[in-house]
Image 1: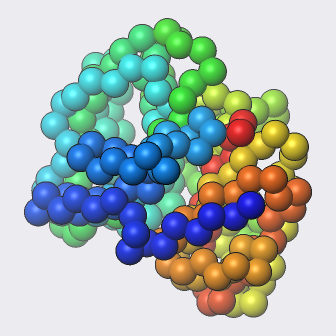
Image 2: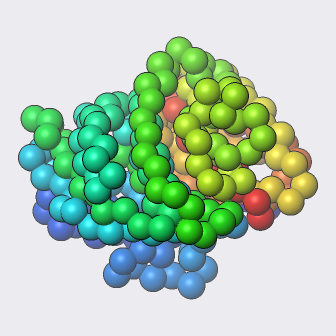
Image 3: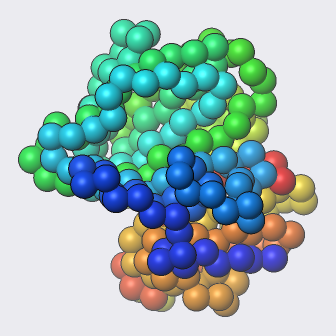
Length: 235
């Protein structure tokens, strides 16, 4: 089963400094058919104007992964962490028992990012934050795991999260094909971060989403120079 969610059907909120699209119900956007996908709860496609951002606010019991597409984001939190994550790189925050953080675009241009929330396997974990550079050369024609809590993810260099899930990315040249095996009982959500292509023969446009379940193999073909981000979770 593959359910394509075209970009122009996503939830939309334009606050001036923040132009956001929501793949799942979030804030004022509510769609009972798009509440979550397995343990994947939020996938926001955010554009943050230069010199703006999210003032300090709290979270708890959520795994929050930020994938920066263009520009950079600067993070500060109540644990004393501070860091700047730029395009192509990833930061994670395990909110656990509770953490307050802010995220600002301190760059001279608009920052574009995906923010992905995954429900943790265990509530009340110790909060944690981390960031890592992932050179795009490492994901050419293959999925590189950027953040994960599955067996083997940490050993492979992924940022750790408290969930049986993984966030991964791949870049493809025009006409290239990528195959990904989806085990029984697993679900995936795929977004064309750049460019377009198809998934199991179904067209996938720029920044469209594809909710995938009960597909043993996911076959992605790029129409042009493309970048795809995929989240795998327990169904």
